[in-house]
Amino acid sequence: GDSVTQMEGPVTLSEEAFLTINCTYTATGYPSLFWYVQYPGEGLQLLLKATKADDKGSNKGFEATYRKETTSFHLEKGSVQVSDSAVYFCALLFYNQGGKLIFGQGTELSVKP
Amino acid sequence: EPEVTQTPSHQVTQMGQEVILRCVPISNHLYFYWYRQILGQKVEFLVSFYNNEISEKSEIFDDQFSVERPDGSNFTLKIRSTKLEDSAMYFCASRVDLGDGYTFGSGTRLTVV
Image 1 (cartoon, helix red, strand yellow):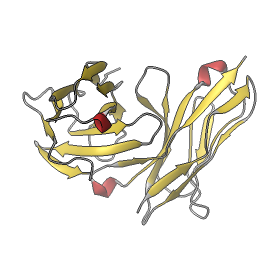
Image 2 (tube, one colour):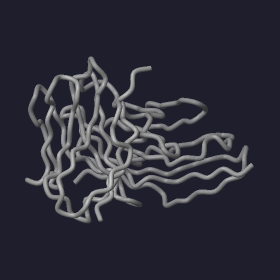
Image 3 (tube, chains in turn purple, red):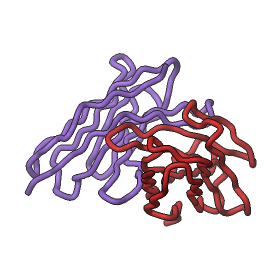
């Protein structure tokens, strides 16, 4: 079945370090791909999305490119801040299936000053 | 910015008791969802609801679960007889249509003792 796999956490970085969180997916068809972020005590917020192959989603300095050939959607940021500390979820969605999101297990990021 | 509101933020209940988790979706949204996240695990789809009926449900959403939109503004998830394994964070979400992104609530942490 359709699934999403993320790199294990927690990931601990120093401020201004480069961030990569890996995400790969298995899907029959052509889903849209998303990154959601969950700050402590809050709900899931959409960070960025890409709806077709080679699309790049970007927001708040984060980027991810939809790579159909490697079935990946890795999240990157050039210089992380303490305020980026959160849990990051990769997800896929088929719009023609009622809009059900399939999530990865989440990766906790901790950024130290 | 419009929000999805969930109440209560934390509920403790005894095994075998009924609980109702409440959500107020964004007013012009048409599609409604419940997801849950057991501590340390993935966010899992439970059910989607459109036009006053369930459009899709997961294997988790068995006869112990039900959803209702009783008054055109609230969207509730009822668990008839809670089990220990129902302890999780429950997220409500809504969106305008299938082409749009989700807006998630902050979640209700349910603890069954």
